[in-house]
Image (cartoon, rainbow, N blue to C red; front, top):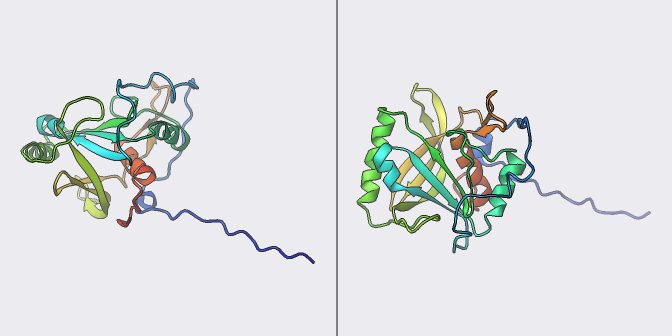
Length: 221
């Protein structure tokens, strides 16, 4: 009798972000467009001259209105587009239903409520970053008012209602901290006025970190 050894399938370890994020329930588009993930991608500059995917934040936008404008640069940006198509089934974020695909990877915004304490604190962060010496250039233009955004880990926190949430911790520039809550948010949403569903920006950030940073999101490389 011929005996064979079973092949052991390597199971992907579930990250801390994935364990604490709400389940992704895909929502079909009313009128799917087969080319929406491949054609007419915004941006004049193509793949950036970097070896590994990298997140950058526009410090000037933080300073002016307390919002995060986040870029993900990827040496093979089509991998970002394909990931969003396969994982989420949409190229749109919940910020004004913006298509996030870019010629260099992706870009999207996480807003702060106008007049809120969060907005004030984010603006103060922007001021400190702009006064620093660690500015980098945009992936989309010559503007040198960005800082790198490095994932640190998942931590416990409180939302504005003082309810327990999980938060992603980041280091901006040279040691400034940023926390983004995500565990309480629905990943995808679609209104009757939208053709495609939209992904919540905080969840999109977490999913892109999981897929492209090469860092185990329990904080270890």
